[in-house]
Image (tube, rainbow, N blue to C red; front, side, top):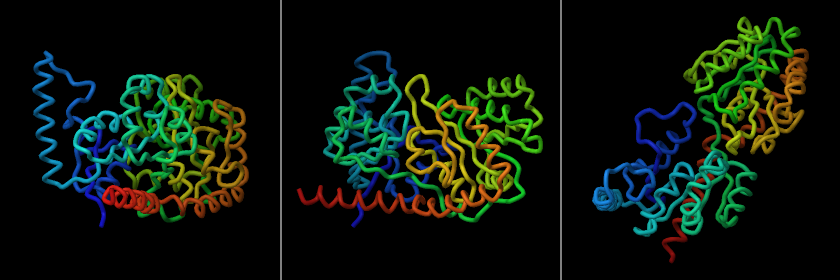
Length: 362
């Protein structure tokens, strides 16, 4: 018998961030119900005018949430992100409700986040019986922060195999594609600079940049400064069908993740799995959990962070050798079959069911 799970999300909005499709997947496949972090008492950033108001607000939230847990017969709280787990842990401990928490990247690496939740993370690590991570590097990081390594399970989110299943590689493709948020750790500026280095040998090629973020303006300025506006197109946020259409016109996916100034790092970006799943090779960096999936020279190429010269060389290597690009994409398709959303969900359910049986036997 499966446990009754409340998935706890940062924001109970009808619109899931385009880069957070994993949350929607968990809601559809795990959840008995969904709670927002704002429904919980004792969270750190509540804004109230007085201590008395805070006390009354917390007491009401505590009563209401206890009632909801009872009505829905919730047996496990599943926290999306370590920061969410940190915020709800006090309530979980008070009500003796087990927490399963999933760390994804920023919550494990950003220096200010770790400092802000220092005490709450220790409480969480002590109380939560199961902690999910996205890479071996993330596991090592959490162990260094005080988490028992025996509690940690590596379960990649996986890509949606119902969407990304057919091979989209085209021998005649000349373009490249980037898909993701415009955050510092994504290293989009280095992709643009690398494309600029290779421009004379990529005159028929277009770089399609799909995504958005605060640095969009500065990235457009960089493209104009390098006189690349004729070859680099910004498409904004697109739906899955539109993304697949541009994938089918692309020779490879470009990813250039870097260590951000605030310590932020990637786990294993899902877009890399999606690209390999449809037969596109990937040019990426030795960063986070990426080398745990991309084998240099097999299903993609890897460079050091910010090494735009080598990155540019790899772009030209694939552009000038389509048979190599196709072969790498084929290797990627085979490897990606083990990283589907269903495979991740099966592993997660297995861990959750084991946890539930252990809890019930106590």
